[in-house]
Image 1 (cartoon, each protein chain N blue to C red):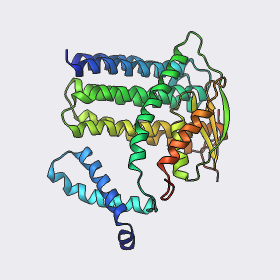
Image 2 (cartoon, helix red, strand yellow):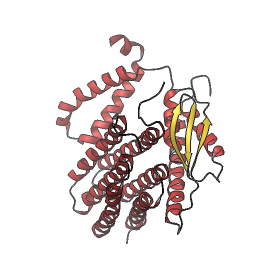
Image 3 (spheres, rainbow over the protein chains, first blue to last red):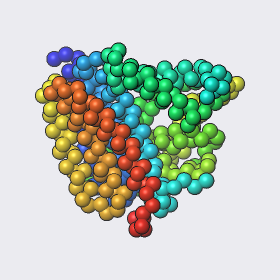
Image 4 (cartoon, chains in turn green, cyan, red):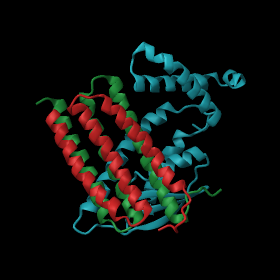
Length: 98
Length: 165
Length: 87
């Protein structure tokens, strides 16, 4: 049992737990805005932990960087998406007002 | 274009280096991949200069490095907070909106602020009219303003202009 | 490690089926969209886990495309002017 394995044995299940919390949050929370809370936070943290857990096992540092890039993209998509969905729900439209 | 290159050659070099790094990550270290990579990097740099013209702003590398651990810590706190609320026998929520007047003047800084607000525990950046932000709070019983102010200061440090520290 | 990654991928698949319920239940387009977004992120997670578990690094590139599309999907939904009133 190596340290890297131990690290992954903690981060991977924890990541899955956050994904599960995100799904359960979507089902249990009463309205769109509270569901967005669960979705953005639990999801991004879930994927972040999964990627942390996988980093010791990739074949090359470039591949590791690619994983981090994927996380950044998802983070950006999640934060922007949450903001857009909330704005659309508030204004009934997604267009920016000046 | 050449005028831009001449006046802002550090920006052009920095962006070119960034896109080259991106290409290395995507395509790996095979030298032949640069056959496509070099034109791609050149076009990407050109597009980025056209879409986001260089501004007189020093890149704040140290501030960015200091921002990352804060960002990770807030993500963890925010994630645990919402997970515990959701998994409680009765979800502990008292949702509502908070209006927040931001002192950030840079539009890019405001967007970063609004996006990172969504990662703070209990808050979600919902809407923005200029400097007025509408934040959704999952629990209005908790005062989130101190956290918003702390985050705003960190974002302001990232975008500080030359001569302002 | 391969077993661990496979188990984690299985757990994620279970969580994805919960997300599918949300897509079916709605009620509004935005609620369904959130379900889809969750499926997308979980799908990325599954692909990355499988990439390590079955040693197929090409799956990482597939996950990268998923991540790029996820950024477009939410924008596409919200930028569209709907005929129906917003929920």
